[in-house]
Image (cartoon, rainbow, N blue to C red; front, side, top):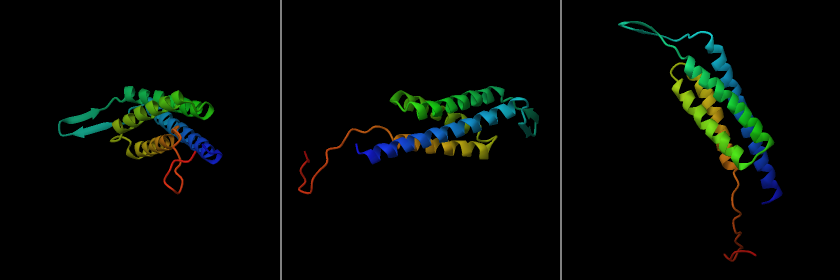
Length: 142
């Protein structure tokens, strides 16, 4: 692997960690601000329903903290296990954001976008096996 490619992968990994930490902060802030009151009410023909989303909001706080920790671990360590941990936390975070999409559409789409961008960057910077280079004659170079 050339030095430029290694440097580019490190920069992509760092950017993915920052995006993940940013999404985690947004997720945790959204969860903490909505924990004190449940502002969601559904009005139907049969009456008024007050929705209690406290469990989902605690899940958002926990995943937000894990995203911040995962982004920090990824920035510092950059090992395969940290990338797998970040992938798992980001997938769980996306699933939680999809569950709250009807209640907070703009916020959820913003966090989903950050998480998807981080996952794309992590996929790009994963370690690949070195490919055999082919010379102009179509033969593998030695």
